[in-house]
Length: 92
Image (cartoon, rainbow, N blue to C red; front, side, top):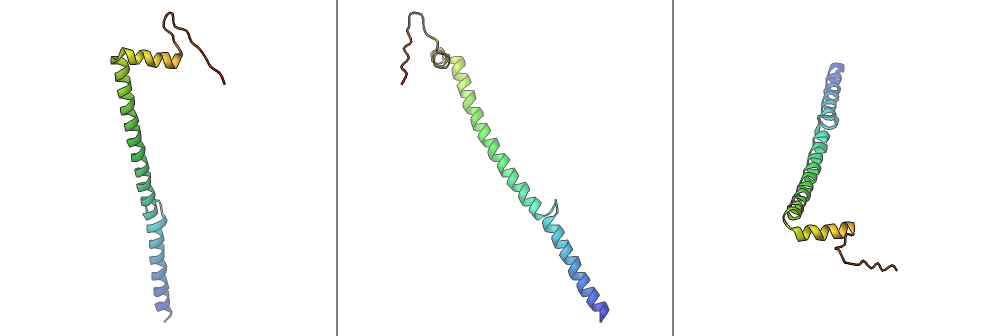
């Protein structure tokens, strides 16, 4: 009778320990879920950076090939003026 109880509770304890290990240890189910979530997050970041990179490449190509666009960007960014132009600043 005592042997049966020991086997029964020992088996329950062993199964419980195995389930706990399967779920909560580093290589367990929770670790797998966390890893998959991190992979999704990183893939989304890669996609965002790829889109940003494509925009920057188009901007670079336009700056290299379109002199009027380059002039417009430089004039806006650095406030350059053509010879004979005057700059009027209106402050509020």
